[in-house]
Length: 140
Image (cartoon, rainbow, N blue to C red; front, side, top):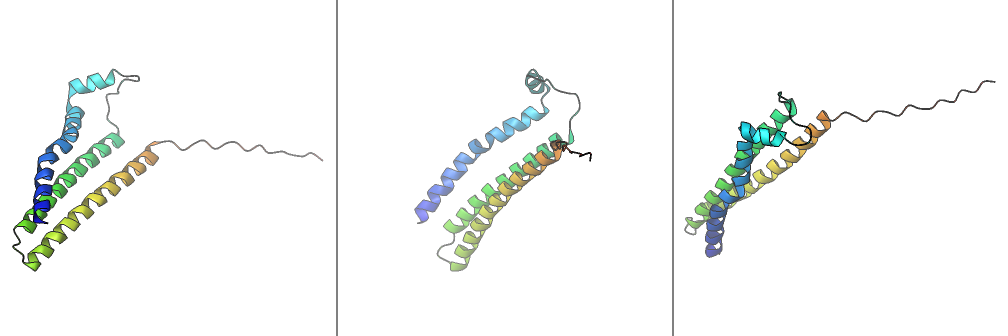
């Protein structure tokens, strides 16, 4: 069992920079004027002002990245605590609790991201126009 935990910890620590690298690339594209000009050469172009939903999305993305990094670090720490427990039941339960709470943290961040994207989408899109009801007036 310890060998499996050691292998999982080593693999997770080696793969975590690669899993997080697209997030850092997209964060660089947010502030780079060259990347913005390349992105603006698309269909509609870009405006010079930044809308509130864009700012909120960027802040939420950064917070999600930070929370994800913290969760990965806590998973690695829990694996290290488990390996170094030496059979002590208190240390083993502490390591398991750390792992469980880190996984719960990842799940909460995923749900928060989904809910916030839904709320932003609903807040920024105009509601559909109501159809005008056809009233029939009878003249008697």
